[in-house]
Image 1: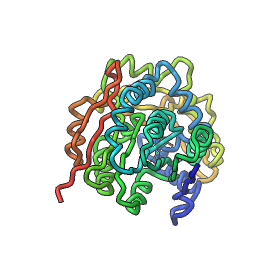
Image 2 (image 1 turned 180 degrees about the vertical axis):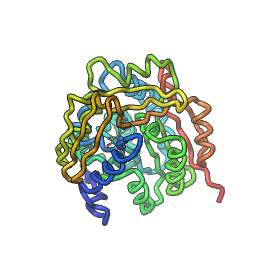
Image 3 (image 1 turned 90 degrees about the vertical axis):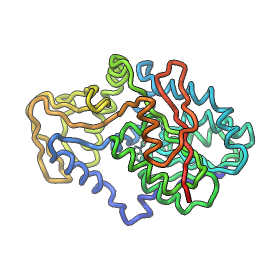
Image 4 (image 1 turned 135 degrees about the vertical axis):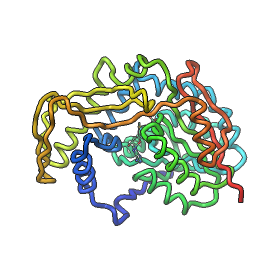
Length: 333
Ligand SMILES: C[S@@+](CC[C@H](N)C(=O)[O-])C[C@H]1O[C@@H](n2cnc3c(N)ncnc32)[C@H](O)[C@@H]1O
């Protein structure tokens, strides 16, 4: 198998290792309200925990997307069969759902190259070991470890092959609406007219279903959220006592988003050794760790229109909980 990945952080002047995390933590915990970016969840433990979340019954999102891709794989392959193309996946994680498409594309002998992009080196290594176990020399993989934006920027240098961009798992929901617009426009700038994107949107629905999905009974989501504190203890010499923090997922009706918090259950101070700084927490004060914005079909259509795309198709799962929306890049010149 022709398979390799480039670590954009190691190759760039921005490679400041844990300093980047320390600076983000300094900014996030000094602000009011306190917050930490969800992209820091995915160390090896965090990536493993996320995979366990995707297997929970309550976390319906993964099952819905498996359902869609399994139903639609032949149609998707047909649409791409004419020209050689790049299958670019943003935030690929363990790539499990993408394997449905890889299998179909290989069976139909499509001429394509798989380009997974993920900020987590651990997630990329897990993906690569799975690819090595499942595929032979027919698959060409050129992974990029780095931020979506850095990954997208390097794609400008790619050849003029047709691009099919996957952004699965409702990761678009981690952005607020303004950030989503900026992100999609940035993507639009580097893509060519006629390229396709397929974006997974979680739909607005009964709040009880949403609440259960982000507060599962086995406590895996709680472990995933609190693992961020363990990561800071390990990498930044912090002394968070995890037992005096708790996880909570809540729906913000005004924003239309699930929000994840790590909440301090008492008044306490936490030292972050690498910053040589102490942060104080009031009882029940929260650290905001993630947004998961939910959409309606018309909000998705508006987003596509506002950022330069034409909606080709909305692919629904059988419960109609989720949409994989397929868009084509439109440019007038
Ligand atoms: C919610 S998981 C989704 C994984 C997979 N796409 C799925 O649908 O199951 C998000 C993935 O995106 C990656 N990620 C998060 N923020 C990122 C960023 N800013 N740039 C690149 N990858 C990012 C994480 O490391 C993680 O593997």
